[in-house]
Length: 408
Image (tube, rainbow, N blue to C red; front, side, top):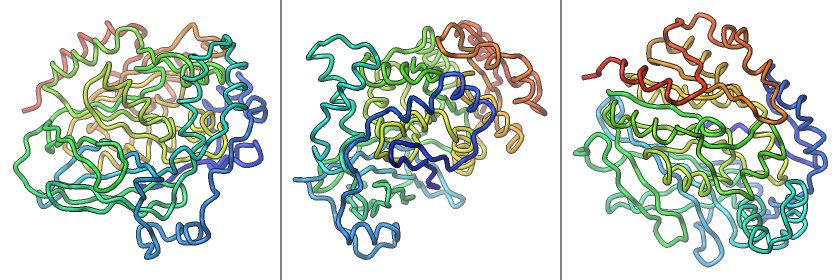
């Protein structure tokens, strides 16, 4: 997996990608830079051994790695989707994030800061929720480590992790007799790690690529305070009508494979996975591979480099499923129109439809620029007009989904 992240140092976020026009509008209108500069710095998450520090640059070829210790370490293994390669064998990309247990011990300062910024009442239970969700941003990451998984009776190694405490491995899956849409659960070996699912998807049929933040989940990505409130304090809230729409899509298109592509960092994986399980069809959650040493990185992830990141991930999905017919669903707060338009210009009729939710009535969002018809015309230049559609109410899409041609 090509790693794309911004480094956060001394309370300042450094861009690795030039800000796009839409990102500049968002960040300037809500003064993200000043807000990020004021955010307290978390404990040093890069306080690992000299050996791990140096050898982490070697990636998977690192001969000096260690296996995770179940007593001191924990691993998140992300759900994945298996695909057939050119010779018909099943493969999948396995992504894992490695941490040292309870290493971010003193969260009181950052909890107090977040609580003050979002106007949280002096409620012990509410602050405990903030602390729990902040923990993955504070725990020390773990480079140069690996974990074994039980892959249908065979031990397969994931990792070792790179400098960001993340590993990505494409592995062959034993066996061949899997049904389209079949979901199987797997576990790690001798490690404290999240169980994970593999969804098997054959080469043909429909597929859905959905944005998460402000498309299916209220995140308020146009506001730094809104991001903090919806991420750390509030119960995650689905966008009105979208769970019902996705249920209809799942039924009407014969259980298509789902990919949920978010600009959020992997630190939010359990939070977002639980939300998806509660409201939306099964599918792989694709998040940005960055483990931040500063909370400002969360805001940067959601507002900088998103177009480049999403197009890169879409290209990877295309490599896995070039014969699937994809439906893209996003919103107008970030760069979904620009990302999806660029993807169509690259891959053409591989994308059967693009639906963009027009977000309105959000504080600190410049509706006039974000929802300007000229913006959409520019983003979807050379994309046929009958392919893309901007909607405000999920009900508008039922007839369009029903009219999609059947794939045999």
